[in-house]
Amino acid sequence: MFTIVKLDATNSTNSYLKEWAKKADVSHGTVVLAKHQESGRGQLGAKWLSDNGKNLTFSILYKFSNLQITDQFYLNCAVSLAIYDALLPIIGKSLTVKWPNDIMSDDKKIGGILIENAVKNGYISQSVIGIGLNVNQIIFSDELPDATSLAIITQKTFDLDSVLDTILQSLEKKLKLLELGQFADLNSAYQNTLYRRNIFSKFNEKNNTFLGKIIGVTIQGKLQIQLESNELREFSLKEVQFIF
Ligand code: BTN
Image (cartoon, rainbow, N blue to C red; front, side, top):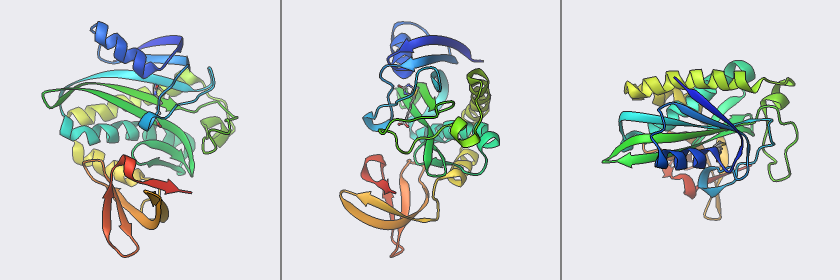
């Protein structure tokens, strides 16, 4: 179901696909992959840095017929789980998803997801699902002290096309579950992959440090943390950071 368009370079595959979809009726399942992004974008306005030709940076245009904006969280679950399932046989048990959707191997980040939705009348009409996965890059700049890659973890070099194919197959399965409305299954599988769930960790909230453990993520996408006092609190993305 996916049609892959390969580019040598673009600013950002998410931006490229969004601009294209503004001008033309881009088919459902179009994948834009770039060897190099001049200004790859991450969550919360961050940059996504990736060495030319070594990693996967791609975006998928996905059209939905019946996905309410209030169910956006399950789209996040579906995409995170698709990458998780695709990488589990390669990486093994060190793999987790750090809320909301950083793909982690132990305490290092191997991939990230940036989903941008077009909304009409309360429904997500289409999404640009952007995925960055560090595959064959061995050296990361000082700007990325917490980055890792498949090659670092496994000491092997990977064929980018075959990793892409594995991820797309996994995405197709999870997005099918989403379209069938299997939200409970997606939700529970996502909660089970969460990074540092039920482990006391240090967090930062507005320059205030506190200890707590992640209990789960609400269906509104908020992180639930239980404090040492047993008080349960919920945080949205901008409100809390892990401290390592
Ligand atoms: C994050 O972890 O902050 C999200 C990173 C998402 C990066 C990918 S790379 C392909 C696509 N194009 C972009 O500009 N960003 C996403």
